[in-house]
Each structure stands twice: as C-alpha cells, then as structure tokens.
Length: 431
Length: 163
Image 1 (tube, each protein chain N blue to C red):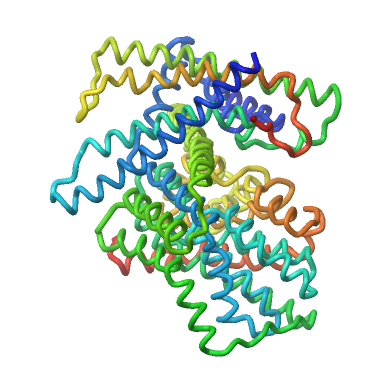
Image 2: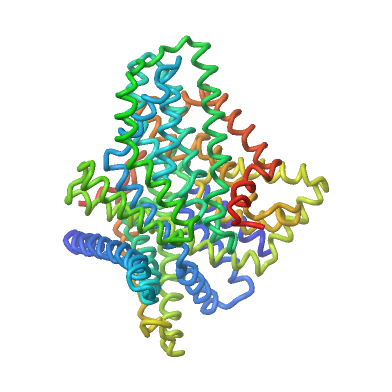
C-alpha cells in the first residue's frame, strides 16, 4: 500500500515535469501520511532534510563545483586541447582522439560533464566541423567522452554515492574510478579509430618536438591539480573536503594569477553560479535523505530484493537485471537523483549478491553515464547539440557504436570486480 | 511588487555569494590551521557544515526563482497554449504545497522543538534553532517565487531571466 502510494505519486509528478526534489519530498510526505499524523510527518521530513545536509563529507561538493567553474572560465580547456593535439593530433582522425583525451582530462579536473562538454566542445566541435568531420559525430563524441570525467576523480557523483551508500570511503571510490573511466575513454578512442579508417579522416599537423614540449609545459599546471588533489587525499595530507578547498585555491591562483584569464567582476558570477548548482544538488540530497528513511521504514529494499530473486536466482542474471533497470532509469533521470534514489534500493540487493559497495557504486555511476548520453533528456546532450548546431535526434546514429563501447566496458566492470577494486586495494584503502 | 521581487533577488544573490566565500574560507582555514598550528580548529568544521545547510536551502529558493531545478521536461516542452499554462500552474501549486507543508510548517516546528530542547552546537554553542531557522525562511521565499512565477509560463527551453 505505502509502496504503491510512493511509486504512484512520484512517477505521476515526475512525468508531469515537477522538479525531482519536489517529487521526492511530496511522495515521501504522502507515504508518511498513511501511517502518521501531519505534524510529526512534516517535522520528520524537515529534520531529515536538515540532518542530511549536516555532513562534512558533503562540503566537498560545493568546493569541487566552484573549482570546476573557475577552471571552465580560466583558459584551462584550451591548454589541455593544445597539449592533447601535440600528443596525438598527427594520427588519422587526430582531432577525434584529441576531443576524447581533452574531454577526459578536463572532466577529470573539473568533475563536471556539462562543463567538459561546453568548455572542450566549444573549441573542438567547430574545429572538427571545419576539418570535414560530421557534426553529428562531433556532438556525440564530445557528450560521451565528457562522461568519463564523472568516474575519474575528483568526482562529485562519487561523493554523492559515498553519502547515499552510508559510508563507503570517498578516497577508495576516487581511486576505484580511474580504471573504469580510462577504459571508457579507450573504448571511445577505439570507435574513433574505426570511424577514422572508414571515413578516411584527415591527420592533424605533426608539430616539432619543441612545440610539443612547450604545449606540455603550458598544460602542466592544470594537470598538476589532479596530482595535488588525489595525492593529498591518498597521502593522508588532507580529507576529500579539504582537497576541495585546495582545488578552489589552486584553480583560482591558476586562472586569476598565472593564466590571467579571469576578472574580479566574473568572480561574483562564478560564486553565484556555484551556489546555485550546489543548492540544486543539496536540495536533492536533502529530500532524498527523507525518502531513504521512509524506504527503510517500509522495508522497500527487501521487497525489491525479493521480487528480483523471484525473477531469477542466478546472481549473474540479477546483476544484469539491475543494470537494465538502471539503464532505463538513466534515460529519463539525471545522474544525481538516480544515484540518490536507487542506491538505497539496489545496494542491499547487490551486497546480498556478494558485491562490495565500492564495486557497486562504480558500476552504477558508469551505467548512469550511458543514460546521461541517451535522448530524450540530458543536459550534456543539449549542450553538445547546441554547439554543433544539430538536433538530438540526429546524433543517435553516430552514437550507437559509442553506446556499444560503453556497454562493453559496463559489462566488464560489472562482472570483473578487480577492475574497480584493484587500485584501492593496492593503495590499502580497502581490505 | 516588481521592485520588492527585485530587491529580494538582489539580497538573495549577495547572501549566497557571501555564504559561499565564507564556506571556502572556513575549510581553507581548517587546512592551514592544522599545518601551521598543529591543532586543527574545530569551529571551522562546524561553521562550514552550517554554511552548507544555509547555501543548500537558500540556494534552492534561488534555483526555484531561476526555474533551474532538475526535472523531466518532456511534457512541458510538448504542450502549448492553455494546456502548457495549466501544467505550469499545477507544478507551481505542487511546489507551494511542498514549501508550506514541509519547509514552513515542518521547518517551524523543527525550529521550535530544537529551541524548546535547548539544543546548542557542540563547538560554537550556537542555538541549533538558529541554524534551522533558514528552513521556514526558505519556505516563505519559495512560496513567494512560486506565486510570482504563475504568469510566466516558461518557453520551450529558456529559463526565467532575472533582472
């Protein structure tokens, strides 16, 4: 009964286009009112919301959002592109490879797929269009490559998962994301290689060694941020949250003082935009915390687990089912709410199957990355298409081989735990 | 009415900017103090957490103002004319119900309860009721913005421009 109310109210409001945070809040309230009086119900929700935000781990999110914003404005994207060009531009279809690598690097540093799409795509898509690449291919490639940065640390989605899962180590998740993230990048480059051969794409210019060195040197301060953040966390010098503050200071110093591409007047806008983005995420987290309380109270994870086991008692099949459900969810729902809503439901099932919460989190984020690139919804698709001046319907065809590459990596990550667990274990972050 | 809204937007924007700067400074000071003075300051952690609650709630009101909260926009984008207007009104009503019930009433009760129980924060000794008081305040803001949004049915993919 309660489950039905929760589901109906949520899906109904969601389909009508009510903001997801409000859908979560109202469906939670409706469910609670079945068994509870109004006053304690609304007080409990308000209390769960405030309590959900009262967390030191979550503080990393506004800080990484702010550092990402600073980098998006600070001329870092162009330097990463120049660096990637010097590295690999001379192969056939060079610009496609440059696109993947610079999206991955920028996504990793900034932690935002949308920022990567607009910052890198803004330079790369017009240039690729000019060189005779199909604009639909360019938009599709930028959007898919931008998602790799969500797996490669620092990554806000992984922090959100850490909180939603109730205590997986952020450091372990960060390190675990490297191999799957790089595998997706390699998978997309394999698609590029095939595409370049088939369409006989031009080579970029071969640059002299001195220029390569010069471009590398120019990009080094940007790349150093990854070393600083991850090195600091792994070395136990600072926590993930403190790493966020360091990233803000570093990005600010780099953009304002070294590259000199940011003005004080822009700073106000950057701070405001970061506060807004932070609040959208925090409001989702707050309402989800209330909902996960009612989910646990109504024993819903156990019901879902029971239903899944009913369908199949083969762990391999159940894992496949979970992945298919998440892929469907990802088509319609943004990544943050999807992680917040489905972690409390599926994580207990996955641990029952013998999966570690760390492994499950990486698999889930990778899965939802695919959903992020599937029409009809998804902000990176809109941004990519807007830059390439095409429509979402047109980029589905060139994207099919990219989906395939991502799906292959997803299956590898789902069924080979070592891909996510080897690095954190090697660093002694997990047993 | 327009002037009141504009003043409110202005105040809210500056509040968010100041809170954001405060958050960065607090966490930064935490790292610095630990290495300079060997003893990490514990008040910075507490104040940063409280700042996050304020940014999260107040910023959410601002995001309602900009119509920037994430949602599935398939249906709103398909509809035109009267149907679009009715759906937009319906969404604003749902937002108002949520804001009044959970943020204003639930939030006020939470403030009252923590005040009544004399809960103070562990390090700074701030009344928790003060920290939570931002919830009903945000609720009122969300209601104002939702009411103000009634005449503005959003176009296909533009978000509401705030002067």
